[in-house]
Image (cartoon, rainbow, N blue to C red; front, side, top):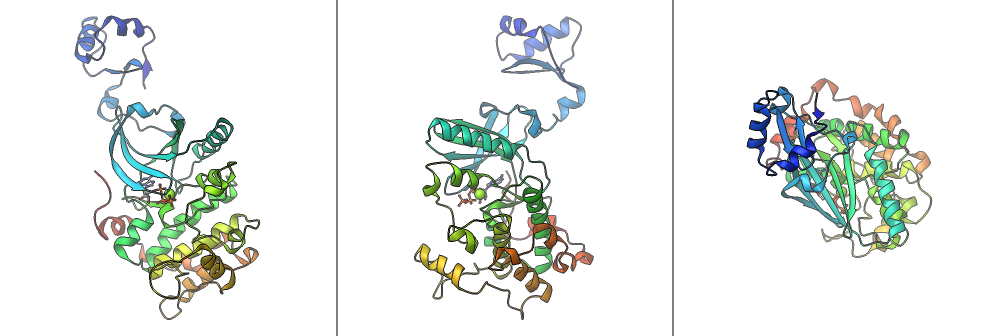
Length: 355
Ligand code: ATP
Ligand code: MG
């Protein structure tokens, strides 16, 4: 559909650089092109088809053509421990992206390892996983261009609605499980940092997992292992004590996130008040020593309670896998309601974080 003009670079030099009008006039006079047939950018000139002048084709992850200079920054949409996330817009296609910048001053070998691991993210293709388009390292920071999710995170959404009713939870977590099954069983990736802020939503009612691999980089990169500043709240017992862990560690986190969305509070709340844990060891003791949390059976369906219990078993071997959980009765008990997550996400709480 679109061709680069082979011999045009000379032409580009002979024209006053960004004056698109005179270029179009010149070429129109040559009898070959009409106004609107040409686009000029810093790489030169390209011919565009008529349909393309109306709506340029969306950029695909495989295009490998994004650069930070081609992005306009629109606004900051979120801040995490490691850095900031901005809404940006591609100058030539008007497409929106999320740009995540993580400050990280590191030496060359670790940098190369990070670049390699981020490439793995780029190869992920699943509708339930946030697309990573490109990543760069420059000036002590890693920049990652991600698919923009205009509803923000489930953590943001939960702040607005306080609790999410069971039927919506079934529809939301069905998508999360599909994403998790893909990561675990097709990509062989353990997420390691599943939590409400790493589940993103959009106005189409889609739910996608993000930041898989980022925490793997943080924990596996030599010299960075001790600088982990994320939350330990959703960490499985086997992991928090420093033992071996696998896919089932994410299933524990999934169960806690689901329970938090249903009840509106983090399941391992400290005994008195809302203050949060005073130290890491108290939290660790609660996770390791206390019986696993469960859903109150007077407020939730038996299917929901059983689903939670299938996730938050102390022994990872007793937890179900993502594909097994997809067939759990809780996942399908509300199918008849034919719920519209899109209108739920857009109507509940304040408007989505769009322009
Ligand atoms: P932590 O740093 O502890 O992991 P976090 O997950 O909230 O916390 P970030 O991953 O930096 O930190 O994300 C910060 C916020 O930015 C998220 O909570 C979410 O609101 C927003 N955000 C992140 N990625 C996207 C995206 N692709 N599209 C839209 N908003 C996003
Ligand atoms: Mg995150």
